[in-house]
Image (cartoon, rainbow, N blue to C red; front, top):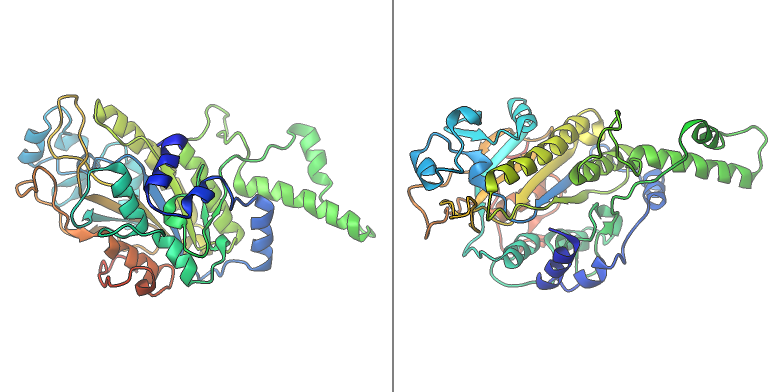
Amino acid sequence: MNKLTRRRFLVASGVTAAGALAAGATQVDWSQLMTAAAQTPLDPNAGVLVVVTLYGGNDGLNTVIPAGDSAYQNARPELAYKPEEVLDLGEGLGLNPGLKGLKGLWDNKELAIVRGVGYPKPDHSHFRSMAIWQTASPETSVPTGWLGRWLDASGSDPLRAVSVEPVLPPLLAGAQTAAASLPVGGLALPPGKLGQSFEGLGGAQPGEGFWQAKAAHSVADLHNAVRVLGGASHQDQQGKAKKGELSAQLDVVAGLIEAGVPTRAYSVSLGGFDTHADERDTQQRLLTELDGALAPFVQRLGRTDRGKQAVVMVYSEFGRRVTANASQGTDHGTAGPLFVLGNGVRGGFHGAEPSLADLDAGDLKQTVDFRDVYATMLENVLGTDPGKVLPGHNGRVANLLA
């Protein structure tokens, strides 16, 4: 989803705070985040939630694939993957071949797949369905996002949640406050000997005055921020190619968690999943990008105490129709799989797999309410009473988190 479309979504979502937020009214810079890390560092035992939104409606059936099911093969003969093409998960299901890193996490019990996630009375509109997911209100439109309401209930500090995206999504807009926004842009410092000399200016010197020490500390902070947030080029070690947008976002999130920034919830995103035509190659390319960003991110988180407290949740606004269309794509559907990743996850399947023999007007039937997942994240990761954010909803996903 590009910036223009995202801005249209902000308006169409009904989240009234979103218009001002989209203009960058709550943007923060690295110095504010580093100052917060120094003054009020993140408790190493505090849970951190990283929300990954896949805009466009990812095809769940070609992500967690019932390749051996004849109903699947018959419904999409050109789009279906053969059993030998998928990464076997057991129970007749396999991951898309673009998700090799996630298969490794699955084998390490660090990936949970919640099956059949959706909401009552599904809507096939991108705007309405995404608004439902981001506000957690399927029945009526509300002016706040679900994590925005969490912010309202937990102290109204915008640094408790950070969006690392071009614009702030409605899920982070509360009634009293909203999350901070840190668009990925990177910082560029001089390379080579000039850069080394510049970095040397940040070293402490004996006998220096107060203001000299402050200036030197600022230079040191600048170089530390580049290490934490990543340089402007985001090139790999060989300098061959730039990282994908999601990888760049997650690199920033990992650095902020490791630096002890007191943020408890992060939002990142990847778009392009509206695959009405020529789906197979497009989706597999996008899933490969998702895999190349998520798997190293989760592995990196597992190497630090603060990182081990983080849980990643990956969702899309809806799945796709079971039957392929005439353009070798799929149209807007309903329920789909949701991924939860991290050191504290109980890996494996959660929720019942929707039946391909019992459809609702050609769509998969929901088996798990998405608010059950949210409530589990609020309670077990963010340490908040879900009733303050999801009034009247009592469901949970049992044994999803350790």
